[in-house]
Length: 228
Image 1 (tube, helix red, strand yellow):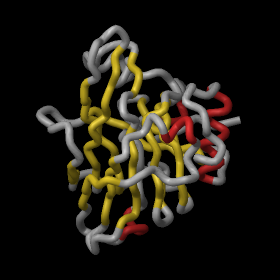
Image 2 (tube, helix red, strand yellow; image 1 turned 60 degrees about the vertical axis):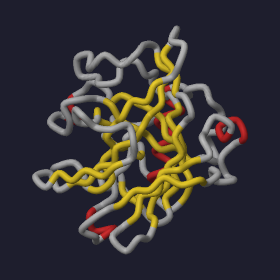
Image 3 (cartoon, helix red, strand yellow; image 1 turned 180 degrees about the horizontal axis):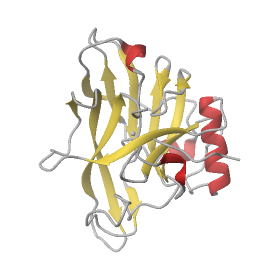
């Protein structure tokens, strides 16, 4: 059984010591998803990836976003402690590949490998008071065990995500709304006060009843962990 979780689509946090760099860069490139991703999931991903590089230009993570993520409605701001009330719990957002060991927002080591990215909400309990104002997170699940598009049951979502970290706690990453005025394209943000780096991800949404999909920028912390 999964324990209450913390979390960055964005989606992703890497321990400060794991990278040891003073800057990050992102680039978009044409790249097919990894072969370990199931056919059902691969067919809804774009052929373009977002590669995150360290100061030496070496990749440590690569993200393939879903071509159109289903939403119950168009984005209209937070609803209470939930920033993305239009997303279903467990909804597939994309795929992430770590080229080296990463660390989640709890500083849990996440082994090099390929993972699906699913939206999740932090449980309402007293275990994570003060960690984040909002409950929105991205959970990583081993791609070899997450092969279908449909959101998994909560217990399965939590247990498989915990397997990514090798603990009883899911591999979880804080997901935030992008700052006002953010362009819907990959970019890097630095928060010196919190000692974090974030990446802006252009999440494409297909709202129920809407004719066309729209791009909605979200913020994923890629370097930095929750304050103790």
